[in-house]
Image 1 (spheres, rainbow, N blue to C red):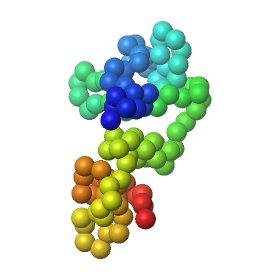
Image 2: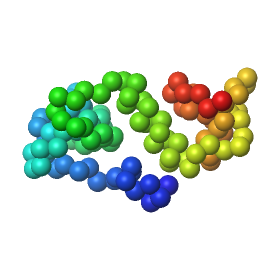
Image 3: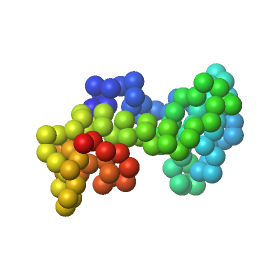
Length: 115
């Protein structure tokens, strides 16, 4: 679905150099080239790189955990082209499963209901 929703799924990170430099401990960055502020989650490896990002209005913009989780949920739904007509396979779950999966967002680790 990344081709269908190319504006949401970008494989190349938009900044080569940031302040601070990419590291696993920080999440707020500014592009050295254009000054764009970002929220980036980086891979937990020695030579880290961003694996998830949100463009921010400015460096003073702080994102809350529920906003970040909502954006991630939205991307998961887009990536699976929505929900299937089938219910989640977990016992007593009445939520709809994601297309191509047999589980709902709740069973992917998110607190989101599709009832």
